[in-house]
Image (cartoon, rainbow over all chains, first blue to last red; front, side):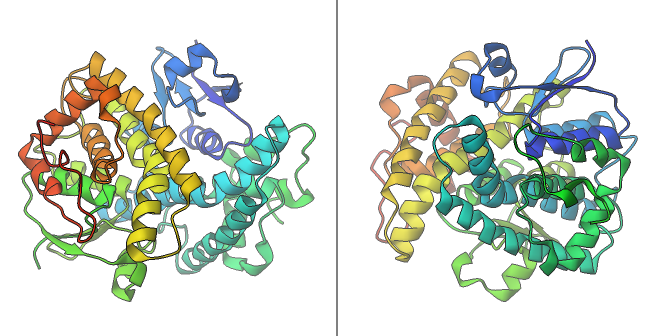
Amino acid sequence: MPRTLYHLPLSAASRKFRVVLAEKGLPFELKVEKTWERRPEFVVMNPACEVPVLVEEDGTAVADTLALTEYLEETYPERRLWPEDPKARLEARRLNAWFDVKFDREVGRMVGEEKLLRRYLGIGTPNSEAIRQGLTSLRQHLAYVDWLADQRKWLAGDELTMADIAAATQISVIDYLGDVPWDGFPDAKAWYAKVKSRPSFRPVLSDYVPGLPPPRHYANPDF
Amino acid sequence: MPRTLYHLPLSAASRKFRVVLAEKGLPFELKVEKTWERRPEFVVMNPACEVPVLVEEDGTAVADTLALTEYLEETYPERRLWPEDPKARLEARRLNAWFDVKFDREVGRMVGEEKLLRRYLGIGTPNSEAIRQGLTSLRQHLAYVDWLADQRKWLAGDELTMADIAAATQISVIDYLGDVPWDGFPDAKAWYAKVKSRPSFRPVLSDYVPGLPPPRHYANPDF
C-alpha cells in the first residue's frame, strides 16, 4: 500500500504534515477520514480518533502531531526541519509546540472547530462566546508572529523549520474562514506570503470545502 | 548558578520534570514562579509565561513541556526515557503527548486550573460546568489507562518511559484535589501505585499547598 495520510481538509495538523511530507520530498496519498463517524479500523490506528494519521508502506501507523513530527525527523533526516544547532533546535521546538498546542487550544479549537465542526456538521450551533475569545487570542498570537518575523528571517531563526510550517498551517485554517486581520500585522503578513509561495504549500491553498468558499485573498501568495 | 527548575507545586508539567530530572540523576534546585505576576525576567525566558522552565548551569533556558522532553533526552541520553526501538519509541511519544496535551486540555485545565487558580488565587469563582466536563473526561482517560495497564507492564510497553511520568504527574494533581475515582479502575490504580513507589516520585508526593490539604491516601504508595 502506498504511504497514506488520513486527513481532513481544514484540520491544521493534517495540513502541517501535507506540507512537511512535501518539503521532505516524500510521496503520499491523501484519504479523508470522517473522524466523527469513529470508524473502528481508524480508532485502532489512533485511539484519540483524530487526524492526521500517517500509514507507511509497511503498515506502520503514526498518530499524534508531536509524535509524528519527531518520527519524520528521525526517519527521514535528509531534509531536516529541525536545525542542527542545539540552541536553534530548542527554539524551533518551543515555537513548534506553541502553534501545535497553544495556538491550537486558544484559537484553533475556539474559532476553527466551533465554526466548522458545528456549522458544517450541523452539531448544534457555534458557541459565539468561544469564537469571540478565540479571535481575541488570535490578535495576541499574530502580534507575536509579527514581532518574531520582524526580528528573524524565519520564525525560529535563519532557516525554515517545523515551527514555520506549524504556524502557517494553523493560521491558514483561520484565514480560510476569513478571520485573520492581516492589516494590523505587516511583518506577519510578509512572512506568511513567503510560506505561501513555497511549492509545498500549494495543495493546501487549493483546498475547497463545498458550501464554504474561502475569501478571495486566501490562495493568493501576493495578498 | 546551579541548574534550576522554575515551577509551581500543583502544575502537572512542573511535576513531570521534577520526576524526569530525578530519574536521570540530574541535581537541580526548585524555585516557585508565580506566573500570574508576569515577572519580566521570566517572560523573557518563556514568552508563554508558563512553568516549568529549566535553566541550565550555563544559563540556557528551556521552556515548553515538549521541547523540554526532547531536550533532556538528547542532552542526557545515559538514562533513556524514550525506548531505543523505533516502534516502541513511537508508542511512548504518542502516549506522552496524550497526557501532556490531551489530558491536560480535557482534564487538567478543566478541573485543576479551575479549582486551583480560581480558588487559590481568588480570580473569580470556579466554572462548575468546566469542572463537571473535566471530571467526565477524567473517567474516560482512567478507563484508557486501566486498559493499557492491564495489557502492558508500563503504559507504553515493557519499560518505564516519559509516558508513565507524564500520565502519573497529570493524575497526581487531580488526586491531590481528591477527585480521582480509583475504585472503578483497579489496573490503573496498581500502575499508579508502582509509579508512586519510585524514589523519583517522593518529592512530588510531599508537596503541601497551604490551606489546601490533600486527601489522606494521596502520599501513600499503598493506597
